[in-house]
Image 1 (spheres, rainbow, N blue to C red):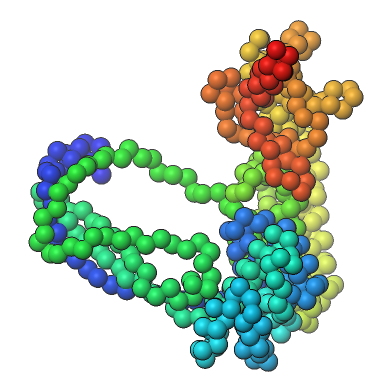
Image 2 (cartoon, rainbow, N blue to C red; image 1 turned 60 degrees about the horizontal axis):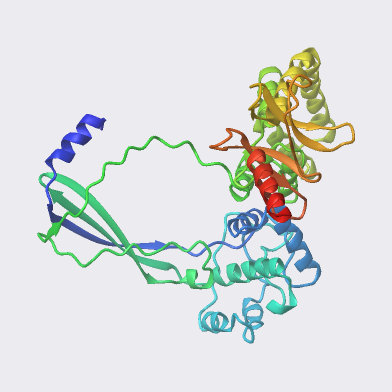
Length: 433
């Protein structure tokens, strides 16, 4: 509907509505399937642990015998696994109530689509207590334990309600949902949806309309990929393996192609993609990598020979190399432009030239004007950490905010460098007085 139509409807509305119909229903959520590596990393990402950190923690738990091998495609427990024995390990732990409840059931697990014989799905293999692990280690261990329990649990059941309300001939819908049986969500409470409870209503009942709002919204762009969603997409596209996908994402961060989570590409990353799509599009297509991965599997399983795959790959790479060589100057210029754009913070308040992140001869970093030496405007920056220029702009100085990333620490939101410097100056003056 366009704005005029919406306003015409708004003009018709009165302060009284009538319940036209009530439709009750039931929605059932099936328990989750066992953890393979991809689903485990997605789940870890949803609780705030990055893919690379989650894999490192899981490998540590595996080495200490607390969970099974964390690199697996399998989503079906082997028939030889003694689920009752594993669940019984937790009878004297903080999971005791859950373990007791499960042991009263038939212990029939869910099954995923992929069954392999190399390693079982990720599951707990021995008991360890919370105070025996570091905080992040415990989060991963608890995630694995609760997912394992959930795969043996009942369905989650919701009661749904759809109400149609007539306001002077115009129909409006109200949807509600109430949890009837928590089922597997009792064992695995991560990302639990909330009840949307509607009051008790009857058909023909009159309702008072207390407020009417016209929301002026635009179509939103697709949401950015978080690490968990990106790993699932990589699996769907055949990019990387269960053992390398998290490492590929880590390289994107370390090479300053992305920052944040959800991932945001930097200008140099966009320039790299734009240049390759223009001059060597073959290597930007998921199909190329997927085919190579499939060829490797076919060699291992005897469906093709190494010589055939090597020859096909050589032919393809020769074509790509020729394209890159023929256009190296154009690609180089696009990348240089991207690097420069990544450093631009805004306009100089003194001469209106670009101000950028610069390095001194001694290796220090600072914000400087591209109009130097005619303009000497500058601001200090921290000596260590990777500098990321974000797309958030200071309302006062019109400069982009800066984020500092140090390995092993939380990102430091420095914010506007000029606001930051002015605050530092103010603090120093207060100390002197």
